[in-house]
Length: 301
Image (cartoon, rainbow, N blue to C red; front, side, top):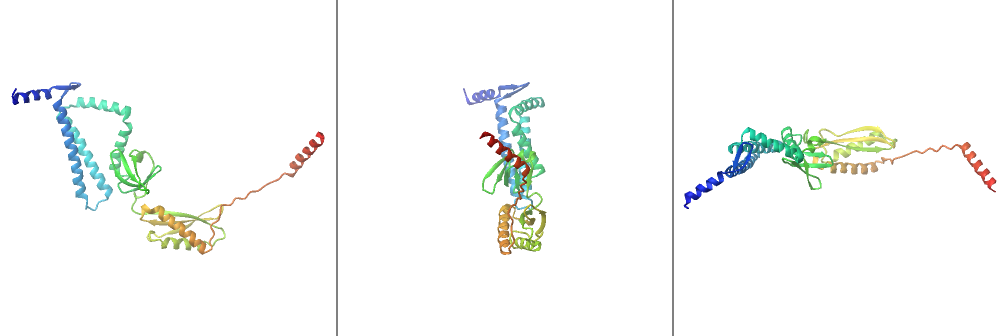
């Protein structure tokens, strides 16, 4: 058997149908072509994503928008690549309907979460309620968004731990995004002082504490308000603005420590929680009980 006959025999073998879906037959050659095209489009999608990343690297565009453009372009190429790959092996609409029915059946049994998270990822990339670099809190998880993937989002906590959060959590649960409205965040510190304390003195101390901190913005300026009349003292609130969103907990700790020190220097008292207990005695009922007890004791003797 010469080389030509061997090649013809091999070509006939790979062209033979290996399985059939409805009226459409698929050979080994079709499968090889499909896998090669899918792999090629996957490589092309990744290459284009890198190319877009390089072209937008030095552009004055929000990093979250850059990430959304890069990721969405990759998904778009993968989608059209899959469609072209299926069309190239002769898959018609009827066959696609059958395949879609099988996929929907599989989704109904075990792929609900995967599909939900994937669709949620597309919604996040399009609507951009969160983006790469945002400081967010969802459920009990808070931190900086590192990356938004097809199924999940990576969040870096302040403990330097990366938590993988399903994308559906950002759609179905309340999300706090400190970076959504800009790079500034308002923080507040509540403090209680005794009722006899001079209000002007408290206001001066709190303003001085805020203005001396290097991470507190001067514009908008800090403000002090008398929040309420508490059970043990007057409730004040110090409001400040900062652009150091990642260090908000440290800033609040610094302010509280400085408030305690300055209150002690200015003889401003932070009161302890107080409770007044009132006892009311019914002497008539007590005498009756004591009288009946004494009578019982005499009868027993």
